[in-house]
Length: 344
Image (cartoon, rainbow, N blue to C red; front, side):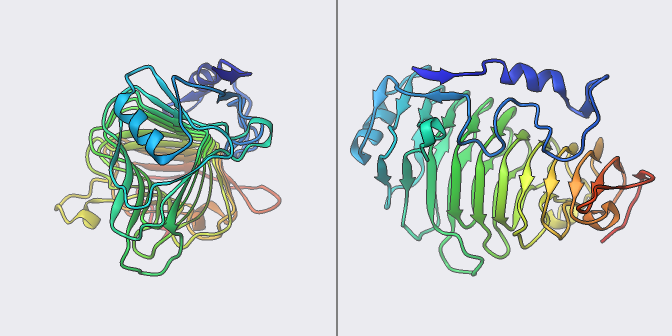
């Protein structure tokens, strides 16, 4: 069973969002505050789609691992409020294709069950290897959230199955990567999460992707080096919309790498990127495009701490920056910035 107070969230997103902007006739807004999703940015209190039971109910590590071996597509593994599960010493825990791992984050003040590791070794805690797998309503805590170049390298989740989803979770203290959407994993949907303290120097990605398309909607980010980063291989694309970016970071909030970063002899910085209707309180670069998207990059209707010419940089063409506001007074950007822009 799950509590669903607002059952048309996905339909709302499909009608309000398009791959490259607003639906005709939609009211013009800036930043994330208009949030048309029907759920709170970052999830938690007020979130509408919350499970209260499942096909398996687990309260211990042993029960969780056993359920993951038994669960079939369409089934729910439920972790009740107040449960804490220590997975220290485990890595690459497989989530079967089509299952849902669920908790109660946001229900009657619930923070969600806590699943954590204190293991300071180079490893992914969990992996989605099959399609249509979901994690919702839980807290995941890694072993280190500092910027220090420590030897341990913590990753929460690797995704290699298409149409997978992570929503209404808190993900933190994984110093390398919170969520890694791997190559050729199409239609990944990451929304209404609070992702923070993924910030190791030289790494530190709240969400990392490459060679896939990802929708990143209505999340709350803070204390990451790059809140969203992409390796920029052909086939890479992402939409980031209605996200709230807090004031703490140590590099670009929304990042797309180019061929120069990969050393592959190209200038390719993914297929397309659209960053719109985000509020970015971080005072550094909000968006960095480190090459030339093969199709288009559009940056619009955001509310930046700094003027657009100081908040966005591109090292190539196929980039358009328009209709943004900045500063506490929401000063309008002015004329669009198009073509080859060098703002760094």
